[in-house]
Image (cartoon, rainbow, N blue to C red):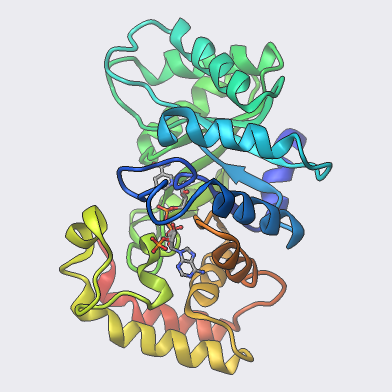
Length: 308
Ligand SMILES: NC(=O)c1ccc[n+]([C@@H]2O[C@H](COP(=O)([O-])OP(=O)(O)OC[C@H]3O[C@@H](n4cnc5c(N)ncnc54)[C@H](OP(=O)(O)O)[C@@H]3O)[C@@H](O)[C@H]2O)c1
């Protein structure tokens, strides 16, 4: 493993900051405030979470800006991951470094620890963006570079393009949780492990569904309700297994079981948290491990959600 990416492999779990400033999906400014978000940040650090994942698009820069403010008030060293969105109108490669510099300005940092391409939008070639990421590393604007939502073939292209600059592809951030196990089925997880590319698991609680607080009678609001409506009737059987395993582990919550399962799979979950209570609860996924038998039982119980 390249020494520059070791910190990512040593990080068991991070915290996702999409909801820190996003009104459209998460209702920031409505059901929770800046104070709540600050509480999530503070307690995450207090409980030993060191990596924060954000993006220039989260809350149109608000997430990065809030993190920049919070960072000024702590001495705890934080690992910062953010992302470049290759919008279709960003046809010039220079847009990447420009965007990175804007992110750094909002974060009030000289460099980040991980800079990721958010989506593989094909108008500009993967090689072009990788060459720009390499420049970002060489200019000291980011310590490592990664991709997000890349399938296996796109990831291999990125890996090879970076290798020509002798820079490792540090990570691929993709959707992975008990209700979506495509990365196991399509070989992406195995390929990441073979290449020492850290798989960062996003939406690890299936946008809140795996906490067990949503049901057919009480669906999640807005877009989440529409997205997961069909899944809700099938969820109780899986939640029952998760709850039993949590009890056998001395009183772990469904969310903690869901996150620990991802850690046991060799990935880094980055659960979102809107407030201190959620962040503290999620941090309780650290410091213990499901048994092999419990992982197998969760695999079996989630089998029917396996997607191609
Ligand atoms: N690269 C990408 O394309 C991409 C895409 C999506 C996400 N991400 C990253 O992944 C991170 C996490 O994903 P996500 O935010 O989509 O979903 P998630 O982590 O699966 O779920 C987060 C949501 O679940 C609820 N929740 C969290 N912890 C809880 C707890 N302990 N008890 C009860 N409710 C709890 C909260 O919403 P409610 O209270 O409203 O239910 C919270 O906002 C994001 O912040 C972002 O950094 C990346």
